[in-house]
Length: 146
Image: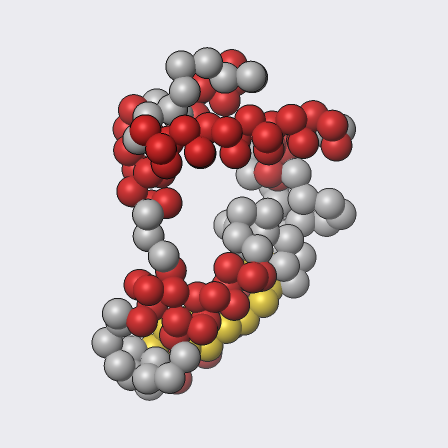
């Protein structure tokens, strides 16, 4: 996708999010009609509810001593490193939180070569699962449950 097209989508999405935050409903018109299909009433209700949640606050509410593993793919275009840092700050203190960055993995921990493109990456069934995830998860579970 050309940079100008991506920038237009981002502007449109920010406007949609602003409208949902203000009114609880998506706008009646989208700059790109393809985006309208993402904002069905069910999706909009879910997204509005999720948008009101603060991961830092939710993390602070977890029981003290609760083991937590936070994995993030370094090529995740949906959750950036600053969001994970904020989550980890909420887990600091009484929580047994571990963080691991999975190299060259996207949001669903599939390997991404080159620049991530969710439109083509996600539906591709031939992309391998990142090999670092299973051993990292196994080590966490063994350390937690023995």
